Image (cartoon, rainbow over all chains, first blue to last red; front, side, top):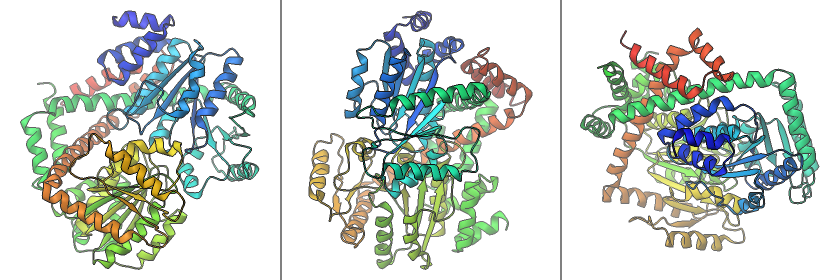
Length: 319
Length: 319
């Protein structure tokens, strides 16, 4: 299929075309940029929701239940499961993911897993692009779920309008420490497994932390108790998600976030494209191999060599 | 202090100079590169050990015990605690870290925490540079411990000669899934908390996984049972670490790894420096702000704008 045909097929709601474009994005196919460029003006309509939290807090089940609730409210849904530690992609691989298959029978739900392939930063860029294509495809709601809680997860969920941070009663200190970095990006907290002892205590703890947050804006993140296994608390969660979007629109924050995201994205794209340009010129040349050898032998140092190679690249560009 | 004085002070073993240079690295101070460049030829002597694993597997305690054992063997030790989810840095912040303070009374142990500051990829670069300075400073052993298990952690530990992956009996499926990505980078497995039920089962599981590993090389990762609280198994662990280094030297893999690391590092440095150059030229200019505005309003798309700005940058560089 030509680029124009693929663009047309995505815009007219062909699921296979959507899946194919996301694969092109993952493979860093040069066609992907042209397609994304053509689709861009059809984007900006979806409500993008990020879901993150420590291992074992039931993220997948919450996402499955949220999806069912959104469908009940006649919203179409796209789901991206991001697993930065997995080289696998394109399918449902983890046990938890199997539950999501209940939605794959529903033509209005599109589910996709994305793993890490290639270098640092590649995953958040690929995820951001995939969100964009699903947006152009016409899904009302796009849920980005991450496995794990590292920096890459923070980068991934930061592309969302509404960030949900999940937790469970009685999670240990180590997990608390890891969570510290994602606490501040939460718009909504979910304390899942409310049937476990300590659920109310956990809600109190989060609220206590919010009480002393010096950066608290006009939106105070609500803390929702759920039991994703039974579905308890999920309608309230979806109510809060919708309320958060109304808040973003009414306060003008949606527009502000859009501007910030445009800037961030432009910078990421430039970084990516510029370095690709440089490395394509260098890789495989004898000069480059020799420089690496000298660095390994401590005859040259990488800081000086990097400066020189960059200067060469910039100076020689026009020749 | 001038750059030359700082370089001199680090090389002559002044701890305050070492701490100060690492702060310059974290702050992306232009002086840092010059110092690193001057120190580079004094590096390549330390044995760098990465320690990673799921939350709650006792990484900090293991690192503390390992350090005591290395000291008993008359080795000097540097420790970097990397927490990609924390914006904090420069001090021992987490509860677990307090235990490490027993070593801070020992002048031959240098402990430093590093958190995330700035952008993606910045942390692994800063950690790599900090390792280098501690190497030039003269520590025999440098331990890089990470909190969490995301992609950034994998990048961080990949700079190590020997990677230790920690685990505990009975960790859940969710944690298993997260660990999948770090399993393959392990040179040594540690099953900690051997007093808990299921410790032997966990060892069997890891060995069964290793039995079917198609990528197994000449080194089969040993699985060590420890109880870091009591110190059990730690001498065996340190024996295996030393054995792994002898293996690397004897097989020529150390040299090969050094070459690969030099290449990786040169590329990372070039990426970083080149992008900084571009963004410094663009940020704050009216043309740049206008481009961002147009992207946010969907009048322009980021893919096309990124291409144009990069071309402008490259073409105009010589003017």
